[in-house]
Length: 337
Image (cartoon, rainbow, N blue to C red; front, side, top):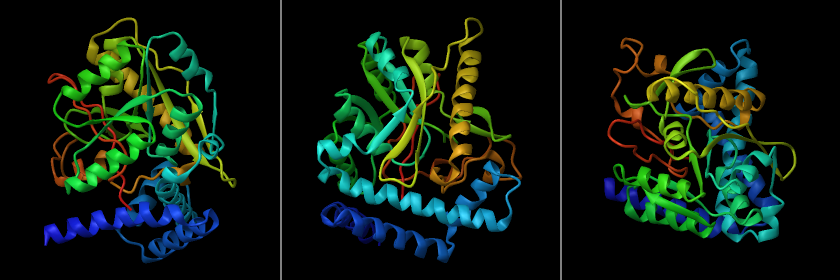
């Protein structure tokens, strides 16, 4: 049964990349919206969780407003998938014209200084398009990490897809990925990680929209160890075909304190930047999983939950890169439709 499911999942993604990319753009847009609306009307587990997460972002929202927001969120989520399936067929000009980041000087100045740059993002809008824009418009390669998915053929598809967009993709394999990322940064390179969800026992506890969750310590640790600039990035859609984004100011390393204290302060600053972008564009935050510690198991204290949902992710987005044994992971997650 597992093998059959694996073949079906792999076949579904293969069909997406082989079929959707051939559709006219207007048809792909309508298809994505239709699939999103059907999923929203069914109100499955993911839609209900998305709505619950939006309730944290907008605690005063009425049930009607949350329902409206979750419908917009599913449309944004399916826009991500339609774009991602079509990205390999986009021309360089289409990629360049598909993203309009604000405050880009934080990134270009950091790269020009030769100190290395870490871009940390939440699950907003289309991470892949932003990455393709960086490699195409800025002509800057970067490194990320991907979890080894099951079946192996699906992992190979995602690696080939991202490498085709100009990314270096490292497998999640113990501490080796962390070391490679550190070397890339010391050489003045660019590292990109999706980093708002880490519910392992080694994540750093932060306040996020007024409640406790955990986020990975890896981005902060990499910045401390290599001297690289840590730049939060948030992404969103508007009514145009062009995705919008903002590169936030660098997260500074505290001048004093232990490594743990510095890491905690930097991770909280990263969380605050994410929160500002999500609050402005909540419908483009694609968090269909449990995030806050209270949602994991109300009967247990933070840090005690070790159930399967703590490690659940979304196939598609970059995954974890383990830090040294005494450190927390660099993390980002996969997306699932």
